[in-house]
Length: 403
Ligand SMILES: [Zn+2]
Image 1 (cartoon, rainbow, N blue to C red):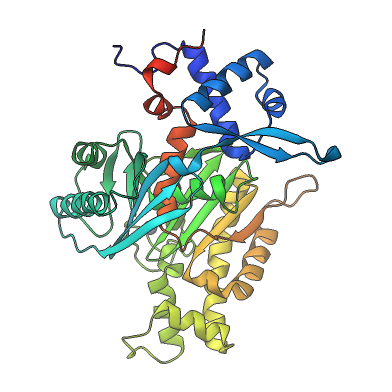
Image 2 (cartoon, rainbow, N blue to C red):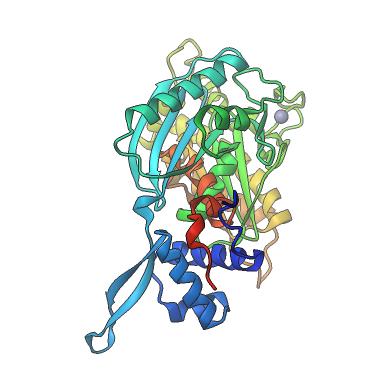
């Protein structure tokens, strides 16, 4: 028996099979005629390869009422329920774990405190939590195709290595290999912001955008970049938080002064508010308080958020001048005060980015997915599947011969 389950398919067929599957997943429901149009493949190949996807249990036929004369059409749909993804996000305090189907429906989730002080602790806590999750939910697990894990910091996604995390010291941590060895499943890693940019592209606010920027404001400022429908990631990519917005500003963790995150991170905004509101002695004050006071129309809170939004808008305008994305998705606690910050950001974009007739409008929107941390890991595995990388793992060897 051949070890490679797709050995019977030549590379062109493998490529075309992956393309067809991707189109069917992205459309959700599609006829064979539409598939021929969208894929530009010959009708015979579409028939043959879609039959293979059906035989493999990846796609099924659905009777659909066509609009004209009530005739039933047969459409193809992915068998999303049968394909599952284990997704995890580690932030500074918690590990969020979710089991999703291919459509992104959350089947089960847990969150556990994460208090790792060392690299070894971090690996042990993630491995134990994921292993326990798999054991606890064995009855609900049908077919997990991969595990996606995201974290704050710098991640070399290609090699599965964590280069830096703000809350745990790591030294070239080969986390992907360690997780794969422990779980026996293909694993994918990336920084949370990069993975969220991908999630927004797949099922969120930037679904229709070819180029988009995801910006998260939290303890720092993270961002993820989609260029020509592809995630552009790598260590040091998307470090919008270290654009200098105030040369005379505060010292930043990166060694520079007045970086964006020294003025718009949750801590910086809270401190600024405490200072201006005369509440520097209030040690329980959080960004949530500042945002809710702004929403309740307290002038100082509004002024502080507007100042932060101006700096954020100014940095975003620089990115717009270089990359001209179709959409910018913002996430984080301050976006709860959207009616206050959005006009300020728009004003900065208007005055600091190129405005010439014919250029695309840059949409600035709030993230809908941010409150669902598992979507970041989900996006990494879905991407691996639809790119064709994971598809061979799903095919049964003796059904791959098409001729
Ligand atoms: Zn910096």
